Image 1 (cartoon, one colour):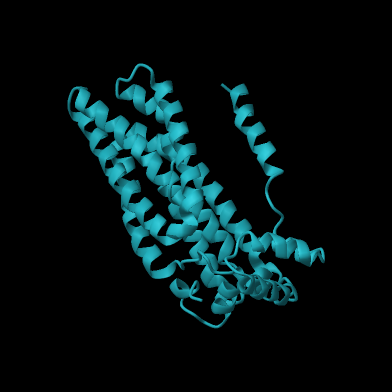
Image 2 (cartoon, rainbow, N blue to C red):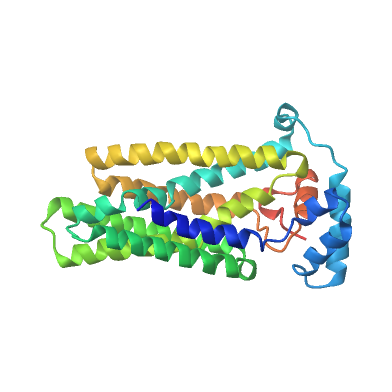
Length: 291
């Protein structure tokens, strides 16, 4: 079980060598021609490439600030709070509690080959993530997040209902189908939306002077909350049952829809420099991605 994990790790290692260098890193190393070549593969025309190169040059002249100075800047605090709440959503609406305890969940539902269903969940997760990465630039990040939160919320309500039925009636085929089907669809909705897009948004909203600090804080928040959610999820399931656990996660999804609408910008197709300029000019958070 542990050894087979080496296979996808090896595949990832091979594909890492095919990733292009960051244009900003290349500019830092005075490799402007290489940076232009990379941008030419990502932008629609030469004017857009030239404009972004100019913006990168300008942004690289900005000195990085200390954490204390950054926290005293109102514009930075605003995007930091957005990043933190996005990671809270990503944790409490996420796939991990379901994936970690999926075998136990399916066994409780009376499925004898629960580990097989768990493997199917992993395949759905991987395949759907590939689809999301391919089409995110066409659809946009916010529409995907809306789609994901709505779908995840509905599936969590179905999961909650399934566990409620399990605790108040005998196991039957209908409950089993609902449990397995809603879990697989839950994984689909998460992997096509929150899984890849939340990380992308958090990497794009911070100004260059504090991008490493902001992304580090939000990433640490994600994994700390993940550890807490995983441990307390099992406690809640043991004490109150899966019905209350998944219903609580569904409520978080509903609140998340309102938060994303009012405070999260659409960053697709907008340069990091433009987002930073809008942020420092006092543009509302939800409009930071406006060109």
